[in-house]
Image (cartoon, rainbow over all chains, first blue to last red):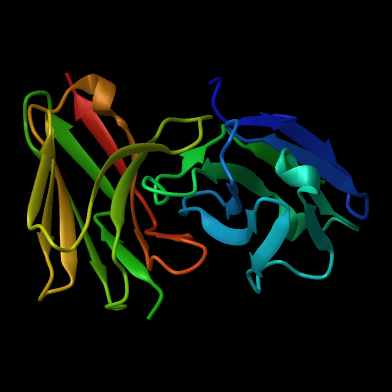
Length: 115
Length: 113
């Protein structure tokens, strides 16, 4: 069990470019979450997967954002036509389904800077 | 109603002192209240959590006090150490289908040696 892994750790991009982030959850964790954290704020929920099914999306997730979790394993978060307001830390968390279902384990995040 | 309000925004405590961070919520459907610790450049890590059927939970130097009627809960760090210097977030979950967490705005704790 190596924890939740996120790649890349840092991403610098120019406005208008597309970016994709990857999250590898703890193995056998059915639940996967994406959060966004801006400087000086707590993480804000973006979207949730149970296995491969995306069951909830926050209104923060505009049409430029898309997330997938093929085969219920790793997940990707893509942002199209990035804007400066997208600059933030994108955090992934995973959780087991069952007794300890509330416990979410976070990765170290991907810090996105849009120039 | 989905907000979790956290105070103070920052806190300076002397080594060996008690650090106290407070949170308040409105949504009575919340049924799980974790505290997360975050160091710079790292993701949040679960510190301790409580459910509303108990008024206090203690793990080592960390204690959560929970007041269901007031809809408030707090984190107490006893014998604070410089290594405790970090940002602390309270959170809440409504135990719905997703168990998503609603986070407070964070408290930056500095423990002076």
